[in-house]
Length: 390
Ligand SMILES: [Zn+2]
Image (cartoon, rainbow, N blue to C red):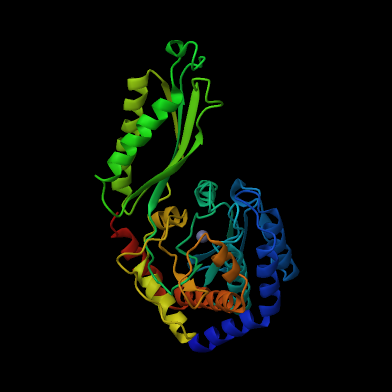
């Protein structure tokens, strides 16, 4: 088998679909949809797949806006993942309009060249990355069963092979007290806002005492109804993050204690609700090396993470806990641009962004091909996965 010739063919098959892939990426960019509501994006990607003869299953894994389709026979199963949800306020400020399309391009190119090779590629359209941990639902829905490796890229402002993506959990806290006239009979009330602020201040004090690579942040979502009524309800939405799954568990306990103490001090009732945990991304070294090599052949040099850089959190972490996986960043800008900003939204529709999306499709497809052509890659990836830390 001439792997070099097959990779050249993969790149040609992506280029042949460039106009359609670009159109899809721009259309999704101009129809930003929030988590679990990505109907336009999922419909557009599935319709395109079907027009190419790939009969994607919709509502895959039990999520309305997820989809999946597989091609090939025998051999290892490589999943190629794409996201397509947007953010409130800034639209595609994370560039997910470029991810679903790249995954579709990679899948179709691989399908075109798989004949005669042993290996299956499974395209998984993944909703709800920005909120709701969509991939956790898809794992529970069985979409990763039998998967030997999972590949995804993310647009960024630097070519980075192993970005630090923190473990994260959401905490909704609610303090319940007793309303009373704030001037006539405040002694009859139990002040839920005071309870919340005591907990918040304890949490702020805690921040000095935690590892500097961890994060605790949030907003107050309810501070009472009127200044002349003792608030009977106050609430906040918090996020707790750490680069280690085990340290995150410790932080959870300490943050919770802040609000338990505050509830006790003020006589409020405390209600809490934790989200599922978003786990640390474990970049699989053999897969990352293969991806970096393919990116280099396409003209991009992948860099290791810088010690000071973090990139938030992603449910791709949970996928990389389960199976060997990668989540490299490919730059869509010539200068530093923060994610989740209007500037990044603008960057996600430029020619540079589209060109990088096509390059990502090629590099993802070429890395999957490596897994099919080189029997040792999947074996090495699994060994690295089983021996990983965190
Ligand atoms: Zn993102």
